Amino acid sequence: MNKADRLRDLEKEIAADKSLPLQGANLVFGEGNINCAVLFIGEAPGAKEDELKRPFVGRSGQLLDKNLEKIGWKRADVYITNIVKRRPPENRDPSPKEIAAYKPYLTKQIKIIQPKIIVTLGRFSMNYFLPEGKISRDQGKIFSAGGLPAYGGAKGDQGGSSFGGEEYLLMPMFHPAAAMRGTRVMKEFEKTFRRLPKLVRKAAELPKK
Ligand code: URA
Image 1 (tube, rainbow, N blue to C red):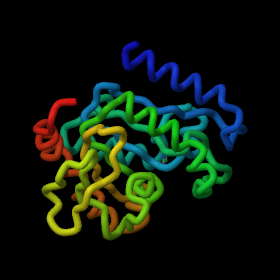
Image 2: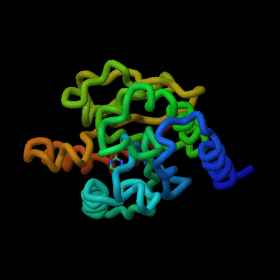
Image 3: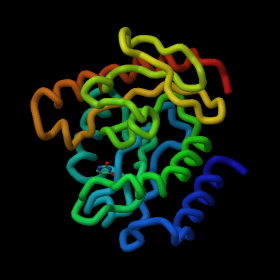
Image 4: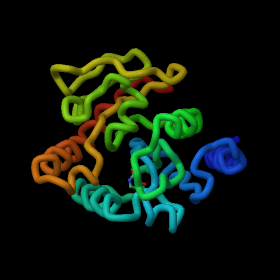
């Protein structure tokens, strides 16, 4: 089965899993280039995302799109999804229980897509990979997965989690919504974003899967 078929099957599997929380909301599976170098993972859909069944199509999505454009990329070049795939009511933070319930499906999605780089947006998706991670300390650092040495981010870099030997680099970023709340975070967000093209070139040197 090819990637597209496997992703379609996975989406059906999630839709059919009635044990998952947040059943009142629409499923927002994810979208983009399934052969992407970079996979972005946010926390959970908001109102606009729930309405359109697409990730990052509200204000946070606009900021994401703007920053992609600034580095000469298109949204269609990357793949975008969330750790929790249905909207929590009133846009509250996803609960640990909700995250735990959706987690195995994110793992499957990553295994199918096999990106070279995973960018987590905000602390919830960062903590999926780095349970001890702290967003203000670790955003913009580069972590390795699959036992590879990390590089480029200098001090503080450490090995990330390995997903069945898959090799990719992990770069946590602030969530775009946090960036919109303050100038300092916005500056960091944009600065980290600008590092992506170089990181993609570096990741191309990773051993072939
Ligand atoms: N915030 C997220 O974390 N994900 C979305 O899809 C939209 C907003």
